[in-house]
Image (cartoon, rainbow, N blue to C red):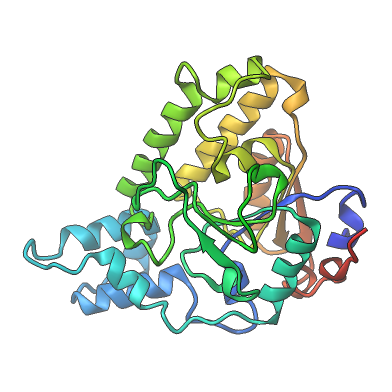
Length: 298
């Protein structure tokens, strides 16, 4: 059974794509999207059985909750969701993993809204100067310094939005479709990603965002349940594979790390058809406490 320290070539510095599993590891049972959505539904007096919940994805459930709010209510459901995360704190494994990325000068993309990763090393927030919007702060990041090239620099990027910009939070299916619509224009427009794949001298619209990392860097993915409601990232991974078919020089390896469980086998075909390696480990400690994160900087 492969472990992280035996899995990757020693000269490779993959970008990290990190999900909410990093917050749930160590017994933090409150740090789950399902739990937070359930709290919001209880606050609104909406009680659903487990079977009724299974009929909806988390994204659909959020939209249903949002539709049930009074029109005159001024506090957005995104803000209410973020308020439930204010007591979340980082742990030693957060700082260990982020310190590894910092020492390697390799980027981190997270789908989490909280700032546990950046707080674990006191990284500073750096806001993009041009074209900034708090709906999609995709060019803004946390790091120890300003950077020029996302795919070759250490920074922490929030793909689904961040707590400090509540309107950026991608929670509902409507939010996900908006993100797809925005990114799709960047990928397929006349000066988009697909053109830059054919013309190596051109720069595409997302070259200063986390999207450039996702499409062009080797990836190590973990803490990510990657359920069927992950519409946005499933589409992005499909586009990544299509880009690599256009030009072999753009092909980069990727590893999806999961713990051995009943649902693992159902995720494997999707990733393997995209050319990614699907790797299972015996326990979560093999991910978050791996000696790999203590690898000295060459």
